[in-house]
Length: 420
Image 1 (cartoon, rainbow, N blue to C red):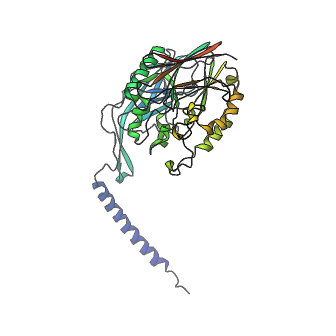
Image 2 (image 1 turned 30 degrees about the vertical axis):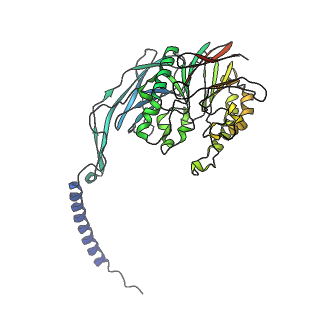
Image 3 (image 1 turned 90 degrees about the vertical axis):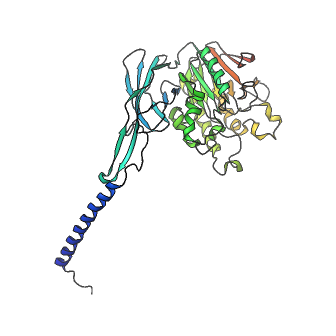
């Protein structure tokens, strides 16, 4: 039988133990207080918070996002005004905390009215955090608030009688090409800009991604709603999974749809240009299930009244579904995306899509619909200035005209599609 516990002895021993523990805790606190603070510090100085112009992405009025590059750890909020009205505040604090970001502050705007001018600016300050273990909380070091330049853009108007859009593709971080495309876009003043994949060569470091995607070559994407399309190079590299931090697609998905005037636009994600089981991916690729899901999503979108009523339905995707490269099947990296074509073609036809605009092959091409190819395919050029292309589209309720030209303005192809 175990010995009977002596209650008085137990209480005496316990009191002594608690006293000793209290002394030790006090000594530990003194020791911890002597440990230099700064187990983690960042952005606590008062230097410039902003690291370049913002980008406006979405591009539907119901899902607009402002991406503001920052030069250090920072926090803040967005102020916006509709058609010259009073400024309102948009927070990025769904759980009560504003962002604490090192590279880009991302603000989602509330649903906005169509066809309106939106003025916006970011209010931000650098912020740091020093762990102070003595008090079991952190010490915040904040810089002075800074306000960005006020910029404007216009929301898309699904009910407009006409629309203009610009398309870039395969820029691959080529600064000369980006500058020329930017100039052509500013001249066109489109309702939206569609960046059709391979904005990057690969995504290795988060610290580089704002300059690759938000303010490419230091250029401003602040004045046109941007429709971002993911390319196969944009899924490569250890930082590729962080892409949603630097893009503003609806719901952070890379397939979505929107309408601008007579045009209903589908953005589809063609993923990689090799099968998922390719040794190149080391077992990390699972694009085919995603591509199958997009077929069902497409069928659902095609039933929406706003989509069905559009005179023109256009799909934008990085890898073409049809290409002359199919006569060279040994060149797998240049091949059209057979799997996506098999998964999507029937749904695209049911949806009334008559044009697909792509990139990827680095060889500009216009393929009208014909035998064995029920949908017209337009493919933009390469990243080098000599081969790069600028695509513009102008649509009214009667016709859609799409023109592809070189950077110097030489017209390479013009396609006209009638409504219906």
